[in-house]
Length: 250
Length: 267
Image 1 (cartoon, rainbow over the protein chains, first blue to last red):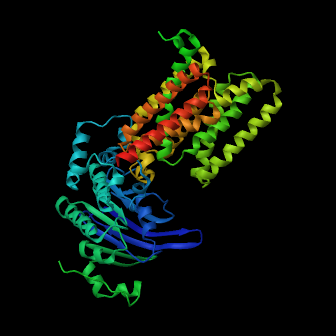
Image 2: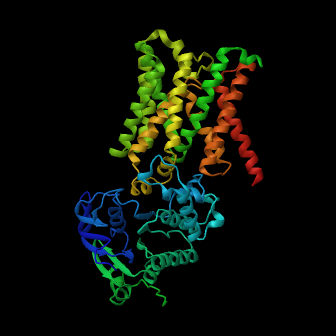
Image 3: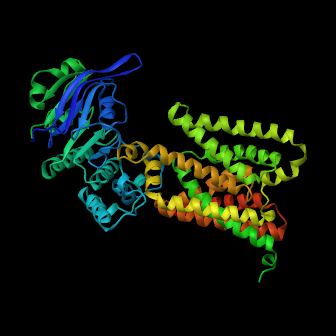
């Protein structure tokens, strides 16, 4: 890990109208970390993510990514964003796997320029990294939920990112595909050194894969190692005593 | 040579029809993908007000239609993005708003109802040399813009948030797409008429979508269906003495029906 954090959030607060959604949240994320942001519904995790991406304006406090104040689009080429299980899959938008992944190569610096040989090579490599080469000419809407989510990873990978940000990526995906999906993320983190930030309500799965947990409930409740988090019974505080968590030993 | 091509007005009709048949489904594909199909219809009704204004002031009506439609497109996009008015509501408002202004203007200029009729229902056989120049040059600009910004337009149609995050100027591109829509609508009104423009921009696209091809191929097939509709519509209108605008859209609908049937049988 390097000393300069990749993401530095300082005293961040956010409100929708009169309702406080985030209060004085501060944390650093370093290169190479695999961070899971968890918290109950309404805890502000999606808001935090949107602030990190610049989709919402910073009201109070500051966010720095790669040492610069967050502003939409300015760090686009370093960040691969994977939205919540994307609604397009339901809309029958006519687009193939390869066409979606090619969007990862669309960048403001290259507006008006057609995709070149290097772009095409990166697109093919990204598709094969998520093991979908056989599906590259299939329509996105013909794929299963798990496969679709891998297409979005490939799209992000094609942009050669340093940081992947994922918003509830496995909602509505069967358990087996979820496991494959998290294994893929884990290997991208370990083998390629990608920094990954994931927002998820799948506390059980997230705990097994991430290196750092950020637990939110308007304020930052916990930031650190997932194992310590489990020992200290934060989960009960957050979700109530009756909820049981299955933790697999890996 | 076929008798139909002995007449210069029919040759002009085929050229103008061909250009519109080419650009209408290209813009239409992006509108359908963005679930903005009603946009073409709303802007068509607004451009009727533009036509009436042009006739009233004695200015070439295609130009006033383009100006009014472009201005409206920009206002709709502003209301949608900056004022939080939902796209659907903005479109519905401008659809009736455009028509009501047109009716008032028509009432003011009682003498031009015949001319107006040709814009309302299309009058491809009265396409003038001036129309041809305007449709040709503006059509080329529309097509070139889409070709140059193709991948960016696909991105904002597919996932606007992700496009914004990656730094694509989405607001500017959305505005541009709306302007291109407004221009296309104004050009197409000579061919199929204001009331049927939406059909020409949407039906060939929906037909092509039945084939379940890539986005690029969907556009290509939509162009094919659209050209086939316009050209066979022109032949039918000439030899069977039918209203061109109407028969073009009827052919487009028939093609949709046949494609749907064949596809259902295949699967």
